[in-house]
Every structure is written in structure tokens, then in C-alpha cells.
Length: 296
Length: 261
Image (cartoon, rainbow over all chains, first blue to last red; front, side, top):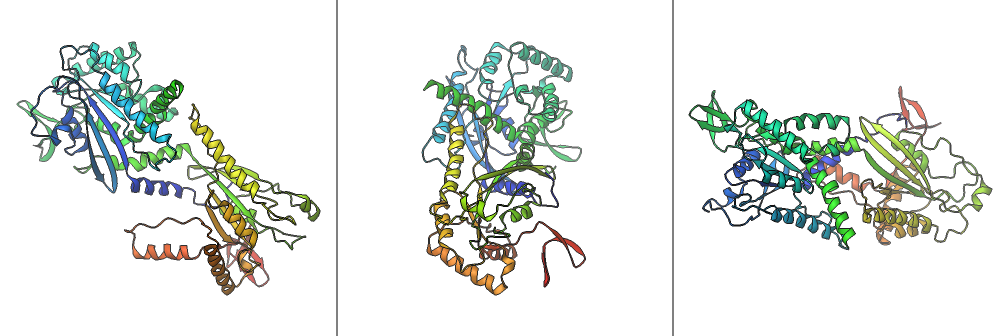
């Protein structure tokens, strides 16, 4: 339909922006992996604040729990007028036992419980205008840097979880691998995932258009990101950087030549945060809902 | 990239990018009576013209105006016009719901009923879709706003206006406007508006309230916002033609005594 002049329809985008900024938003992330893989440090590095479990309970002695426990901590952080209610769910005890059979069950249960909660709110007669969203939008899975293959536990976990939540696998403590070792490891992991038909985020099935596909293909080539976390600053070339100081050099966390932390951060926060939430809501939650409605 | 910057402040832009791709839906209803005395010539309150002026487009190109006989036998209909418009990359699917015949009959008892039924039907449809198993592509056909045209030729609201608005104010956002305002002098406009506002209050009609502005806005904005709210109902004029005024081409109405822009 032809327009004879400027109507001002695009102003709706500003209206949306203002609303988003006013209401703020929620983001729920889960970190899974054996103890000692730097999960808590990674979370702190991602959000540049002390938001992890360890930061909230600094006096607690590090003792591996006998079963997998889930602990969620919520913080409200603000940046440039945008408020985010961030909830980080940690899973100490995962994969740490002698017998790790079914150690994914408490995690699956937790994720489904959040879907159930949301469903209950949605079917109430008097619904809340804004249903509180505790659903897990992204699950970062820490793969130990063995350099060989994915372990049976990794495969079992990712296979089951990628069906109900967005799984983002990362190679933890990647500073123990050289660049060649990293490349080979990644290659093998990608093959493994393909062989076992494990669909990690960003899932190919949910690319919306060719532009999305091109963007996500580039990301998929690099998954899993080889990351390093750090919460200490050091002096490098006159600048203060976050990093790890070893005898043979300083590993700069935000230097793309050293590790892929910036890629993880960009994916989770700067470019795909809304997408993670959308897929959780439109795909994973809807699947859960259909299953539940068919049950009853 | 300053040190403390995490990057989630980009979220509004991420949301924005997705919305631009998806496009928006908006359903606008226009309602209002014809002038009961008008048996020849223009008998409307300028609803279609206003819609064309609002969206700077010609939505009713093929419309036929009914003559007096045809109008006597007509009942209230609900008609829908859907257009897809795009501006600066933002796509809008605009649905205009019209109510031709409203208030045109001799006996207009409950003529608002088809309109209320239509609105309820859209809610019903949405409710069914929302409760269904496959919620992927729900179409939102609910009426988002109803512009109600009040005639400038009376002394405020007529009984039918009150009836209509009271029947609908719990179902849809009503924005009342004072139509064909170029037939009134500024003083008359002021008088009409005051009367209408009084009557809206008196009859307990709940019209759409524009949102409160933020407490952190500057004083000038707050004053503007206040002035805006105090001018409701807006006195409007629409035009399908472009005229020359002071060397510029503008949408307007050309009278011997001057040009209304």
C-alpha cells in the first residue's frame, strides 16, 4: 500500500524500547560441570560482578556435596538504564561422584519444575500481567579440557538436556591447551555431537531466515568456545586487563587471540540474549506445555 | 569499550531487531453516527477521511456511498479493511474496522450490539488459539483501539453516544474525537469539549487514559503531556485532498474564506 508521506509508524520501536527499559527483564542461566572447572569464576567474569554462588558464600569450605544440589542466586544489575534480574543456578556435585549415573536427573527436574510453574501461572483465571519467569534460558555446560573426546557423561548429559533447554557447551580452562590442541579437540567434539544427533545452541532448526542462518553458521563453526575465566586484574602494556598470570606469560581473558571468552560473552549477552529467551519460551516451553496438556 | 561494560544494555536493540523482522499488527475501529438530517451529500462524520489522513493512504478507493433509500433499509454492518504498510523498514499490518450504518436507522435501539459482538468474537478467537496445542502463529485480530466520532452539530453527547460508549468501554480502548471540527469556532470547540468531558464523567464512561509520563522527564515535557491530556476529546479534521497554502502543498480543505490545514 502506497504511503503519501511520513506517518511515523517507526515510532513504535521507540515505544517498545522505552517499555523494555522500564519493565527491565529477567535472565536465568545455569552452569553445569564438575567442580574445579571454573564455573563460578566464569560467571563473575561474564557479568563483571560478584554474582556467583561462591561470591555469595565466601566463608563456606569447598566440600563436594554427596548429591547434586542446585543453588540459585539472584542479583539485579543495571547498565545504561537497563535493569536486568539475573539468576545464576549452579550445580555443585554434578559429575563429582564415583558413580554418576542419573546425576542429570535433579537438573532435568529443576528445569521442568520452572516450566510447570510458568504453566500454572498461565492457566490461572486471574493471570498476572507479567508472569515471573524463572525458566532456564541457557545452560552452559563445562567440558573438561582433556583434549581427547567427549566423555560418556558429557554425551549423556547434553543429549538429554538439549531436548529441553538451550545448551551451550564450552571447553573450560582452555589455557591448558595450545591452539592446535584446541582446534583438534573442537573438531572431535563437533563430530561427536553430530554422530549422537545432539543439537546445541544455536540450533539449526530454529534459524529463522537466511540472514540468521549465515550468522549462526559462523557461530556453529566455533562451538564449543574455548574459554578462560579470571577475576583478577593485571598490568599489560600499560593497561589493566582481566587475566591469569603464569610464569610464562599473562593470559588475557578478553583477548580473542588468547581465548574465546569474548565470543561466549557476545553470544550469551550482547547478541543472542533475547533469542535465548525466545527459543526457551516459543520452543522448549511450548513442547513442555503440549506434553502436559496431552497427559491430562 | 569501557571496562565495566558487560553489554546487556543492547537488549532493547536485540528486541528491536526481532520486532522489525516480525512486523506489527494493529486493529483500529472507527465508529460514530451519521448526521441524521443528512439525506443527500456527505452524511458521515468524516471517519474514512480521517483514517486516510492518519495513515496517509487511500483505504477506501472503491467505496460506494449509499443513497437515502438504500440507507433506510440497511442494518449495522461490520466491515474490515486490511492493508500492509511499511515505513523505514518497519512493517505494519493495519486493520481498520468500520461500522457503516451505525446510528443511521430510524430506530437505533441496541445498534451497538453487533459492534460489541464483533469485539467479543475476536477475543473468543484469540482465547481459543491461546488455549490450543499449536500456538506458533496466533493472529491477533483483537480490536486495539476504537475512535469514536462525536458530532459537532449537537450540544455534547447524544443519548446514542452515551449508550455506545457505556456498552463498549469495558471491552475496548475508546478514544473519543470531536469530528469535523472545522465547522466550529475556537470558542465553540472549547464549549463542546467541556460539555463532553462533563458528560463522560457524569455517565461514568471510562475512556482510554494516556499513560503517565515518567517522573524523571523534564518540566517542559510534563507540561506538554498535561496539555495533551487536557485537550481530550481531540477536535479533528481530515482531508483526502492536497491544497496549496502559503506556497506549500498540504493536506487540507479549501474554503472561500480560507484554508484549513
